[in-house]
Length: 187
Image 1 (cartoon, rainbow, N blue to C red):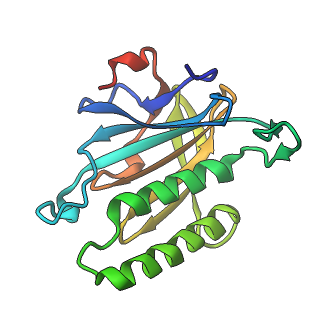
Image 2: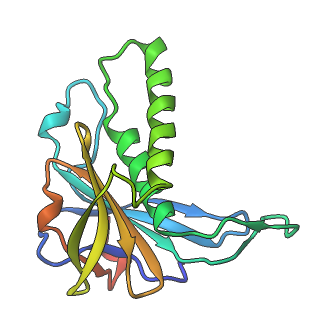
Image 3: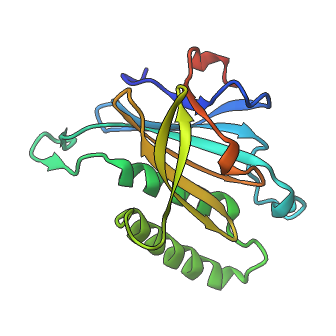
């Protein structure tokens, strides 16, 4: 029900695909959503994080102006930083260290979330490098970052959307993105 095209990995990826989270405004307008490729990220103790292979593509509608839910104001516009933030927080939510003491885990997660927000707000800063990947077959520049937990990237597509992605166990350097022709084909 999104008014924008969804993106996923292009046809070079032949593994499992699935629809993940969808973010909507208070009035039901879909603002962003994500599609998963490969393994389903898991935090279960029996799942070794280093053996997981997945990539998640986040599609964010480009909205220069967004009205607040109650109609009394205007929200911040969506941008490539929005896609970077959603991808960074997605990576955190699926890869945080499970063997950490429970009392410390929330502090760690709060700290890492704040860092992800700061990084997304400074895409031209030293925390990011540039990576060119195909979007619908056209070379497109992305902001790219790696950490011990995986990688995150963010850029814009031609279709009036921003693309964020995160993953682990799959190299970002070989990825390509394309409009999903039939989102119902995703599990």
